[in-house]
Structure formats: C-alpha cells, structure tokens
Image 1 (cartoon, rainbow, N blue to C red):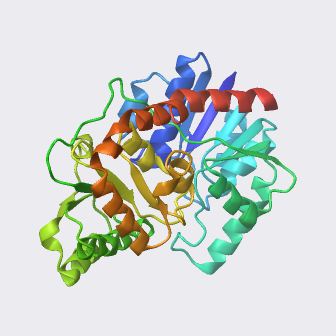
Image 2: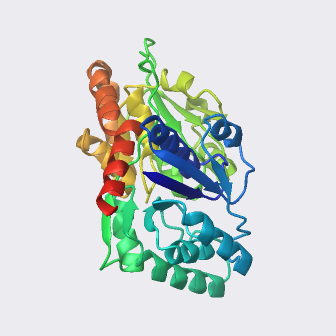
Length: 359
C-alpha cells in the first residue's frame, strides 16, 4: 500500500502534527508512506525528517497558484502512489490528483468558511472549486460528526462515500495522572486565546461560581489574540485575586497535575483534542452544548458535564468543589477512555480500513 499525505507545511498546528504522527504510525505498520509539503519551513520539519519518511515538495505557491508546470509535475508525482490523502484544500492539488486517476481520500479537519480574511470574490471562487472537487473524491472523512454535518451542509456531498474517523494522538508511555493533594480547588484551562475559544464564558461563569460561595482558583494557560481582552474582563469583574493568567507555557503537563477539573468553553470546535489530553491526566472536563466536536469527546463519558449556560457551568463547578474526592476516584476511568478511543494506533487502523475498502 503506497500512500501520499498532502499538507501545507510542518508548522505547529493541530492538523500538521496529527498528519505527521499518523504517517509515522503507518510506517511502523509497514505501509509505504510519504508526505508532500508546500513549504519545508516549520517547527516539525526536522522531526519529520528524522523519521526517514520520504518528503516531496509540491511547489504550490499559495491557494490560487494555477501554474501549468506545477500542475503537470503534481500529476506525474501522484501517479506513483495508490492513494492521495489530502488534508486541506488547494485547487491545483485537487485538479492534479483527480487527473492522475489515483484514489483520493480527503479529510476535513474543520471548515474555513467565514474564518479566512479574503475578498468575497476569492471566497466565492475558492468555495465553488472546492465544492466541485470535494464531490469527486473517492471517500471523504471528517474528524467528528459535527464537522461532517457542516461539510454536508456546505458542500452537498450527496453522491460520495463519507464517514467519521475520530482523531488520535500519540499516547505517553507513562500514565500522566497526578493528584492535587492540596486543599485548594483549582479550575484549569489550557487553550489558545482566540474568539472561538470563548474564554469569556469561563470568566463570567467563574464570577458566578464565586458569587454562589465557591472557593477556588482559576488557572489560565495559553496566549493568543484575545489575551488582552480576557485580562480586561477579569479586571472589570474584579476577580483578579482568584485567577492566575500564566500565558504560554511549554510544559503544560505540570499544570494539568494541579487541576481538579478542566473547563473548555469553546464553541463550534471541529474536534476536542484538549479534552483527550485532560482525560489522559485523569481530569474531568466541562464543556458547553454548542462546542461541536468537543462535545462528542466529553458526552459519551461524562454527559453530566455538558452545560448550556454560564450559570449551569457555575453550578456544575460548585458540585465538583463539593465532590472533589469523588471526581478524583474516577481518574483511571478517564485515562482508560482516552487510551482506548483516541490513540494514534486506533486512528491508523481506521484509516487502513478506509484505504483497503477503496483499493
């Protein structure tokens, strides 16, 4: 089985690391796997290079590159493989893949509609081309039911094979759980600070938690575009004495060990990788009903931790405070859930079956 994964670059990002780890696991299982990059610049390039996985350069220059030379080179390169596995959209790459007559798997990791900052004309053209080619792949894979539903609504996809393959991650060799042995009640967040993460909802819920008599600290780990806005909200609500805003930290596992519970207040997440990471540390996860793929990770294990409003989140935090020992007792159950359902090994086998079924 000869597979080629196509991604933009080896930069830090959820998609890039996921695909690289998938390719590494596929190689371990004896699959002849290569990775094609538009750019070699990125933090994961040396890591990928060290795995002795062949790396091809696509020569694609941006989202609207329509070079005839690049198209012909891509078409020739693709013909060497049995399956082209696309992980993001490029018109010229999709055109060449289709023309090569090689089987095409396209994984949608999330939808970019309404997120990119580009002209309306470019958006209309790109989405029209994307709709055309997504409806002509051999199989379309989404990383959650939520993402698949958005893809169907946005692109039709009535006449192609489609399914969900949940993301997997490289599991640590040792169990990550750590007991918070102090008397403090620590509520933790590890996240990028962006509008979709809705950290404002957590801040407002924490204020309600304190108003209801809750005792504890909120620990925020991360940085991003809304970092200053969140700090201003904390100041406005006059709760800074109860919150640690730590910014970006490289060793987040040290902080997970100190948390009693984790709250991820995002909305419309394609997948809930942060929940998997928290579960690997044995920590309960609280999330909102509109969190998309994140809810699909949390609800099967802890449906009681899905809330609709900031007030419900505050009430749930009060319950967790009052039942610290009880939630700690379920740590091993959470770890087993994450290991059994979200490993890179499980993901590799799921994709192997996808490949096998279309060859």
